[in-house]
Image 1 (tube, rainbow, N blue to C red):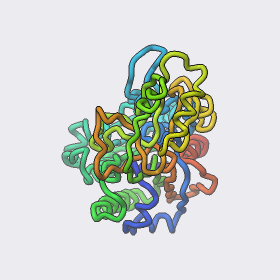
Image 2 (tube, rainbow, N blue to C red):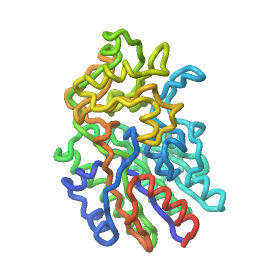
Image 3 (cartoon, helix red, strand yellow):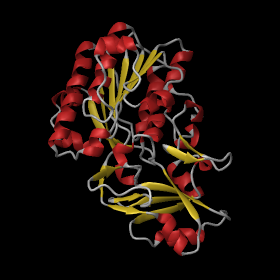
Image 4 (cartoon, rainbow, N blue to C red):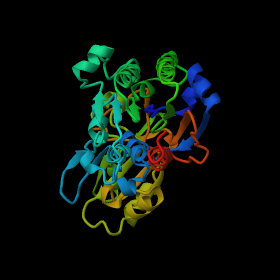
Length: 370
């Protein structure tokens, strides 16, 4: 039985493939197929990785951000535990069928979030000795080279044991730090391209699905919406949807934010009117409208969801200063992502979202393993 290998390149905006030389990926796309699809909102890592591995929308799987305020039980939490996922993952489905799965991540948060049901799970931040002995010590998480280590670790582990399904997922530090036209981006894409090429050469019978979770944009303005609401006599808290423990990437500044109103929340109209008149806020949606439009689990979002303009992020200036060259995501402007498919009988013509990839694996690959 051959292996299906999913490579999720964090933050791979399609522009990187258009600008940076990637001969092996171009070869795979030409021999197989390539198209651009849409990710999930908010356009952040946890939401989209879970949509990928479950083939479902956030309204079902429950991951609505990287970070959330649990108003029912109290407290703010990183959404980095599998306990938050409400639906079956492709790994759990494979496990129930007696199949073996591999997960290799750059960020350990994704190993913790996604690893239920996996046969083997490894992260670059906490690698087991046997992988380090085979691949080498992982580079720092804030480096261009760490993503190549993820691919090389996947290659090593797959060469040692058989797996029916492998999911290799990187980190987007390089994309946060460098625009597509910068030489560092060309070097980073080259590292990925060579690593993927080695996997293809080592496993010529495997099926390959290469995609991303979200895109990336340059950001030059920061808004703190609770201040604007306070001037209108409305008390509110803003919960950043991009927030995680990798603050060097993005300073916890993203292009979408959840607003929790204090006091009465059954009628957010006054707050919505204030927000909709702020330059840089493209849309402000009530909980119900946001959940309906973006297929979100309503109890895990704020009373209001605010979406920024292309150059806008949301943050508190008392906590963070807007970096001079910030690149980030989270808004509707970072939804476009590529999908490249290479291998026998892979058909992605009907894919419209990154979620389609997971649904395809669950409905076709795991049902009819080759």
